[in-house]
Image (cartoon, rainbow, N blue to C red; front, side, top):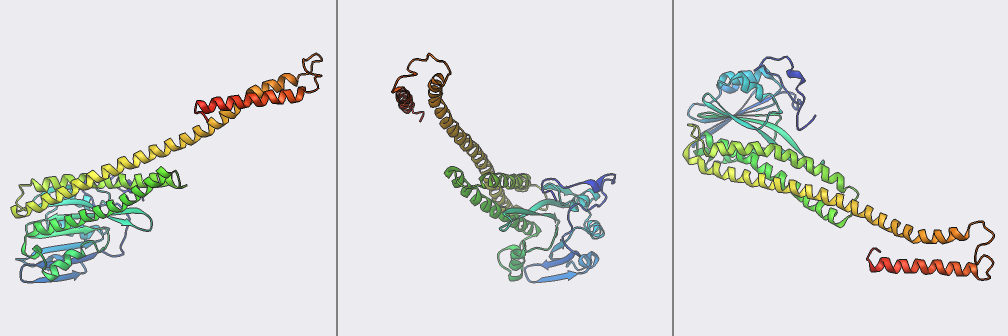
Length: 354
């Protein structure tokens, strides 16, 4: 399935707000998990359906609901009703090709993001759709498939490490966004190493797969830029937000997150320019090698043209050609041709054409 723009044939003729899953089904059944916590205690729950999950939410706690799997529209619809989400927001949740953005919908702030992971085997970036809903005392996250992305946050909650258990829901949202941004940096670092390693191959004029690597890396960098650039708009909004859901104590963290995304985006642009320069250098090297070959062929042709001229004259079938019956005529002609060739080679070397 295409990464840059997925097929929308299923949406043809559908009414706005109708839940139509776009993407590839990655799980047999959805997974519903809940973590309810405050300063004193924490409780984890895993249920078979969304109604039990929502009823298990603890009052006076921060509730983190995580739903893995987006293909069951009924479950998504039930969650939407429970948290007052509009049909258009629900439609975006089941669209795994949704562009990163944020929406203020009633009492919630909804974030649509891409979780990126670099595959060491295939040397490409794999993206998963992440949707996060921030409310007064809850955070709801939707993922395409069950993953280990947010396990470090869960461990900090279980061990009561840091300030996440002592803070409001907006700080949990920050930690989730920060984890996603950290994965962007990891992917960027991995791609950057390949770009810089490929630069050595380009400059050394070695490697049969140089052009293949250039185009592959350019595709991955373009995908990174397409993903990270709109996320920067989200962090800009958060650090300047006047929403009641974003507390002033959390603003420094969102400012730091915006700086991290700004640096990542600048690095993406640098690597994009570098891979473009590598392509130009590669094409220049090809042109130079072709010019070197043509130069050698041209010099050989230039040397043999006068020799061919001399041989052509003495190869004509006329009876009265001067020196035709001269005893040393053949050797004289060869000597003249050799002198012409030597003089031309000396001339080319002085002109640095050879």
